Image (cartoon, rainbow, N blue to C red; front, side):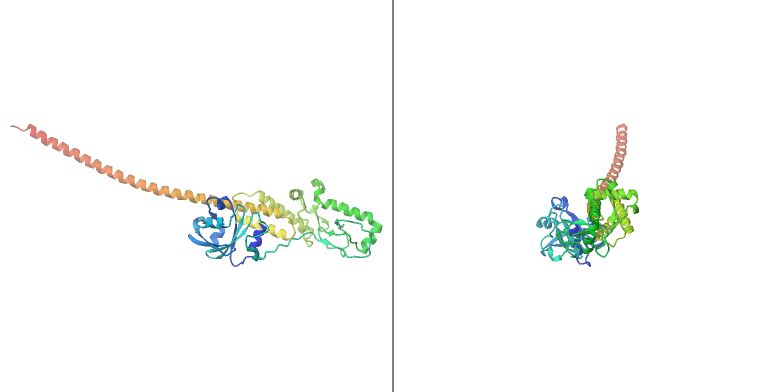
Length: 382
């Protein structure tokens, strides 16, 4: 999903775009492609029309857009087969004109590559790892550490960057003269503090909520959270086997960090409480909030992934319901027409029956009249 967002972010903003995850009916049978209804209502024709799909090589495919169903039908099968689409592939549709899409394909099983020549989009991904802080070389001292260790949080501000997790690369390097000199007197306490802090910050060593401590930029913020929010945050961290705030920006205050954690929990609970009737606007709002938290360094990608799966599934189910509703409505209208036709025939049959009944009565009267004439003739005198 991140690759899809990268593709959309690099498209010309003056043209709208939408994405669609391929499901079985799109690529194996039926070969209908329902486009997102909100997108179609805003940008697509209100009537059936021919829509061109242009792939990354510039090849064009004519398809028929069914306005009432917000779907592509005739021609979509050729596009799907021609590009060997499979379930899970994600297509980004860039509406470059009123009846033409430029289509970008993000393959389900080639997550690091766009289909064909999409590399021209120049999508760059810059991951933000934990920064390794290499101290300046001072007087040479004995190598007191041979691996990455955590600095104690009370080190002087002038010597380290103020981050929630600061890592010192001491492999074949020396500490500052100050730390070297201090270590002569307090070597044991210094490294005991490092090991103690490491045991707290290394989430894998936390066995229960009793040993769960939340430290942000050197400050413990457990007291800023209610017991409920602390427990829920612990459960979220357990699900990822790491602190979600591990890479939080150094400029975030303790109070703001606590508010952020509370917001994460609120969104996680809202996701768990989602129903099929949950509006797309809610999904979009939550996703935007989580995206903002990601930019602050929070590990909430797993929540965004779940949210995007729910959005896609809800949209597909709604489209399926709309499609079935359209079919049922069509059949219902057909039955109503049939009923009207039969009712009209019934009225005509009743009228015919009334006419025949009248003719029968006339015939009866004529027969009786003829009978009287005949009897008069029979009884006449010679």
